Length: 284
Length: 124
Image (cartoon, rainbow over all chains, first blue to last red; front, side, top):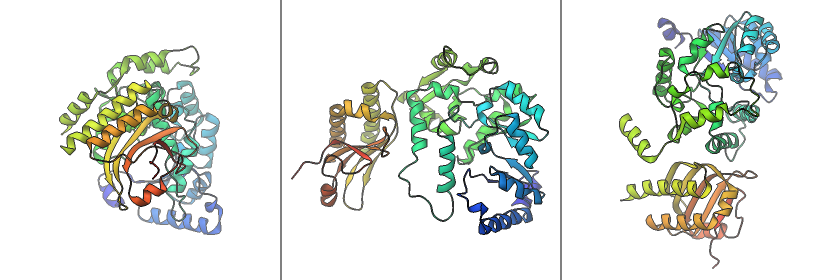
């Protein structure tokens, strides 16, 4: 598969980014397993490995594959970026929470020489209170062996419901519009589209839209995490033109500022049944 | 006919919950189900509804689900909201015609920690 991808000049990246290994990586068996696995990836021609765990970043030093640090390492400051670069990072995926903090982005850019990557469409809640817990839950429910028999994904249900009751949270979440990619030229040329668990057609559409840097439609069609809400809300992407110029200088101290609320009122509408029906008809 | 009934049931549920709560409560999915034990029913997935709203609007929700059950030829033995234990977030509302075994198991005010009973199973 790697050879085929290389024939098309596409690099293969393997993601091994749980936030929690439950300590198993620090056991003799865990160490041997990870070493064996990285060896196999290297043998088949994988170009890079995305990881969140510092110990695995060090293990990757022994391989020619590039080390990509995941957004799950929550790199949101020059101090943290430098730490991961010194550990061996070739690429750092920055914490999306700082996507609209240009002062911080520029400071990180100045502090490290490795490549930086920005996630454009994750769409998680801004400084989400569930982020650590949710990543930990994923780590354990997707692991081989003992999986906890959970009764539901509390964090996901809660996250979506919060936005149903308070849609302003969708506007506040730090996505980057396709049109605003050019504002980040001084920071990085590398952008990541999230949502690998979505359908292939969704991913291709998203990729095409971001490549064209132009989109006339419902922003929720492009966002990964709250994609369930694309049948509830319509966010007119064109009405968000210029918001980035406010947000890039915004101190994120929301008390007393109603900017995001006003944007929500202007750009976001509840989709009625007729509109849903027409949309389905158009798509079919 | 069944197709139109289920489409209308989902829409009616969403509209009513929005009217009762003032929030744009979202019903992404509604389905008719049949279980191996013999229970049949109508279940909906929900986003944005809190337990407090179900408690306050209990009677309206009960009436609405009885109407939906009637339109789908289901006997509304029990109506319940599903939540995550310990959380106030409601993730589903269900009306169910119970099989004899489940009728016994679902009796009482709190038959399971993940459900809030909107309409109790009638004592025999």
